[in-house]
Length: 166
Image 1 (cartoon, one colour):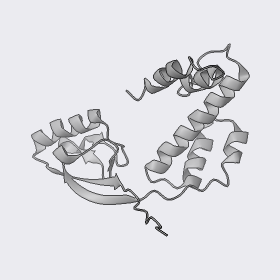
Image 2 (cartoon, rainbow, N blue to C red):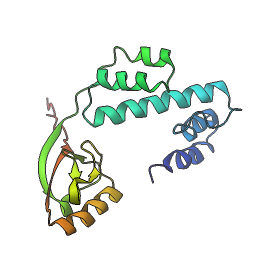
Image 3 (spheres, rainbow, N blue to C red):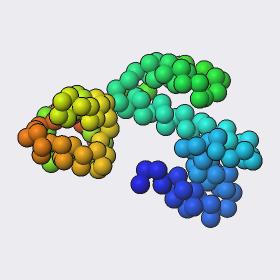
């Protein structure tokens, strides 16, 4: 479903007047280099969106913004000027709650706190994996064979705001 979201969003936006370029940027966000005959503004917009998603994915897994930027520079997939623009980026810290949960209580978006190993110390899922329905099913299957019931995860917290009633 995640892989299909750019196509779905682009299809919805392409019917709105003057948003055709935005629709193409969104359509190409996961593979900005796939077609050679794309308008430069679309290609650049897709690169920016792709970079933002890669940066966000790393930060969500608990990597600092500086370390995430270092990883992205080392990959040599992004324009240096775009990466330089992120030098002063400092996102608000993500709040996570550490929990030990039964596998049946896991939900998408939770993050594995430890490597999940199968029989013979075979790595099934790495620490830092963001759980999807597929990964949760895989954990359920391996846990049945190992009688493992509890998994350490980080759960994204929700901030509670005080409402000022004057």
